[in-house]
Length: 407
Image (tube, rainbow, N blue to C red; front, side, top):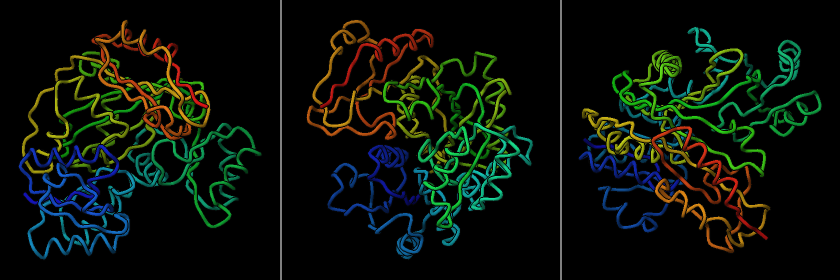
């Protein structure tokens, strides 16, 4: 099977999808923004060809590159796994008559107000919402729903560009920063109180083959705004055995069915609180921040290979062991500047070495990255344990003990 994979070189984990396709026996052609000479030998060897474009989000350039490949070989699939690439690739897929996720599904998974309107019509419980560039519509929505509210880009990913607003002054500042006065639009949502998590799947022919449930500590918006927090997310090994997760699984499957997702990885965010379980948003793509790496360790599986098999039209067959809970903790520098060193690592290694999967500690002298840059922006540790509560306790200990010094 001939598969075009969009942007194999960046971000770094993209190469694992190329590897998964190659392992599954697919003939892989890459299209990306990096010069071919900038690709390492291993990545080049997994592909039979590679074409460079100025931007993979430039649909005209991407269409031209795909058609160039089609002039030489039959193309069975055109795949992307990065949020910003999903809709452009769907448009090119349609223009080039290649099967896969439809433009409608890709659009609904990208445009948050349209997504919520569609799923609300399908009786999926979600926060009240508005997508608009009209000040008067926004004022009416604020008056009707009341503060606090969440303001975010219509097509953002994760917590990028997202803010909580609690009063008129904050709303005005947030809207001005969003570019509303220059003709832009924003998504505004009711603030949903409660615990936040995500539900990920590998869905084949519309049926969920693999599913994973993961918890944020604390919720993402708080984690991405406060330097003093060492945020975590932890995936549970009780997806099948704990009855409390059945509601999350039912909700996730309803969303996938409503959006007509047939063969794809999915990533769905949810909240659970005083108003019950609420859908937040879904991406028709794998989760970011190395979540699949944690799922692989937790379940003795290679999801990249299984994804490659799915894309190649083969059966997804490796069972999930549910042996471990796994998680990551982000360790933030004490200030902006340059990393000068670390403390507390030796103690953590002595006490919890058997639980450590891997870690990343940038060399002293490395520039720090801002809190909003995410869980893997600076230092981090990934860990495992058979018991969820014990893993949470260990990660808390790491957050309290390990310090990232900067100057």
